[in-house]
Amino acid sequence: MVGLERVTTRLVEPADEERLAHMWPRLSPRTVYRRFHGPVRSFPATSVHRLVAADHQEYDAIVAVVDDEIVGVVRYECDRDDPSRAEFALVVQDDWQGVGLGGRLMDEVLTLARSRGVTTLIGALLAENRPMLRLLQRHVPGAPLRLHDGVYEVAVPLGSDPPRR
Ligand SMILES: CC(C)(COP(=O)(O)OP(=O)(O)OC[C@H]1O[C@@H](n2cnc3c(N)ncnc32)[C@H](O)[C@@H]1OP(=O)(O)O)[C@@H](O)C(=O)NCCC(=O)NCCS
Image (cartoon, rainbow, N blue to C red; front, side, top):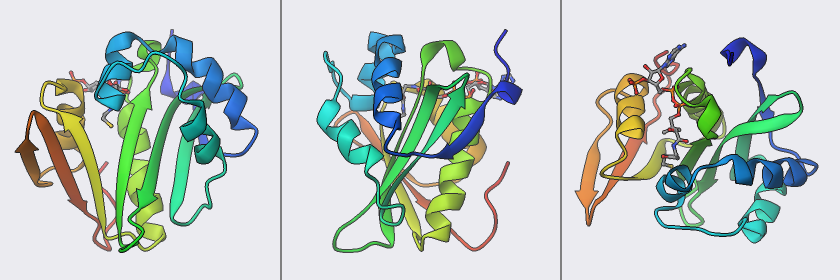
């Protein structure tokens, strides 16, 4: 039985490259499609290599760990020209979906990005991605969504108040 109490979260570290590689085969094609907006067939080694070398300021990630395996990850990356704006992306492996982990990672990235001076957190999700739409409705209610070519862009304003739980 999966339960959130088994999950710890922490910032990504260089040794996570192998753990992220191990997570890859545990993602279903649908989960991969929704995360990358297309069918990515092989482990995205270059971007993961970059992710684990995060500078913990303009680029960072939080990993969710169970029994020394990564089961979810959320990252943000600041805009080079305007570091007060950052893009985020979130994924939870299939057998850990639906127990609140995505929501927890979302809350944590909001807090982390705000502490780094980000004032707008931007995400992109396929219009058919109902689980992510519901998650946004629960965790960042009222955040504006803009639909373009089958993809929603959400822009979450990060005020000085803590995010809604
Ligand atoms: C979108 C995604 C991150 C959601 O992750 P998740 O861990 O399933 O999200 P949560 O568990 O927080 O919420 C999902 C459901 O669990 C339910 N839930 C939340 N907390 C719960 C708890 N403590 N106990 C039981 N159920 C809970 C929620 O009510 C929600 O149900 P609903 O969708 O029917 O309303 C995940 O589906 C995913 O990785 N998808 C592929 C990648 C993707 O789409 N990324 C977004 C674009 S970047």
